[in-house]
Image (tube, one colour):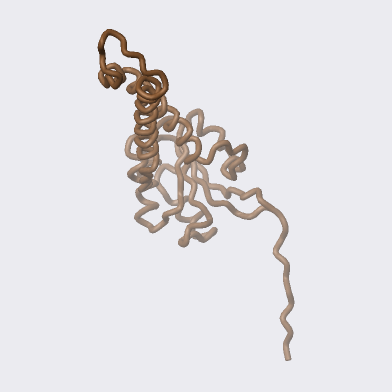
Length: 191
């Protein structure tokens, strides 16, 4: 009877994905579209400036931030109006010049300001939360030459978590894309 031997995997960081470098945004955009057509879904692009059409090509749809901003503004409006109502009608009702205690036209400027204030806070802190910040380290920082993404190069990273990902096959696919300059592995960095 044959016995199975246990072979341990080499220790060290795993594979986060495969990254391809491009010289211009048009080549990157075409590569993202081609990669989507090939069936890859878990990928991201890194560019030195916003590229028109990239979100659509990546099929990035996240509608949570506008809802957070709307709810922040709504909460600001309700809170600002309720505070003024409480102060002027309930806590300190002063009848000045025969005006009604609940003089809602007078409440509009401060209500508007609290709406804008809380909507702005929701936008900033919601964006930070939804982007996963603060995040002092991300595996993409292990990629060779990724610092050039903030200067003049464009990168496409296909993540190893993609169901279609195969280290050898994905590398060959990325190397055959038009305009690609360099393809390398990105180590995960987690032990």
